[in-house]
Length: 269
Image 1: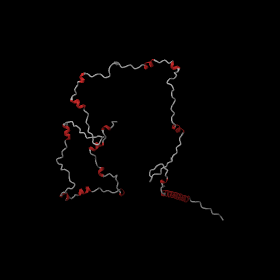
Image 2: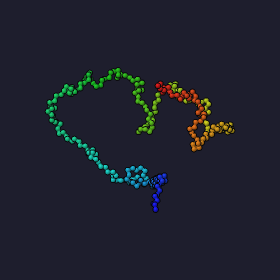
Image 3: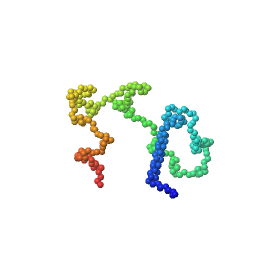
Image 4: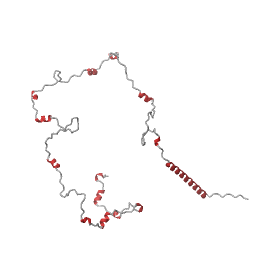
């Protein structure tokens, strides 16, 4: 008897099964990852108050207990240790104000510039050492009589002292100097008059006339007072539709003039 050979698999059928298997595997992986993410988000947030040694005290219900021992131990670097040491000052005391002068200093010869700088500064021209410091006053100055204006200017200004300030505060009346304002200042100081048709302030409650109570609004007035009605976006309203009147409108000469740029901003090129 002849052995029957198995039929060759159909490539279309094999490809369809493989695509279905891959799709099922990806869907299962995405479902597992979504379940893991949901489970992670469902976990309660950790309690941050149990870490009492953290550096910040923000968002705490109560202050952490005080600690006597330091929480941070700092290790100094060799450079920091060197900078922390106190500076050594020169404490050698000179025993005698006389010291030895070197041989080169004994043989040194000063230059002309050094000799000129070593000379003391001469006094100013015309200086007389026998002249007294304060010159005497002449007879005219001694017999001068001050005028009333000079006496007025020599008096100190009197400033008003507010009551309650200072150890010995007393109200001092300020002397007013008589002065006259100009005609323009007096004109500006004059209060403005009310308009001839001004009827004064209106009371909160006033009577309504009989004509206003019996008034009947026209159809045009009711049409203008009602708000505009339009459909919503999901009901077919298109906000970008231009009306026929707007498309057939022609601008006026004034609008055309306003649309043009300024001449000073136009380039001649």
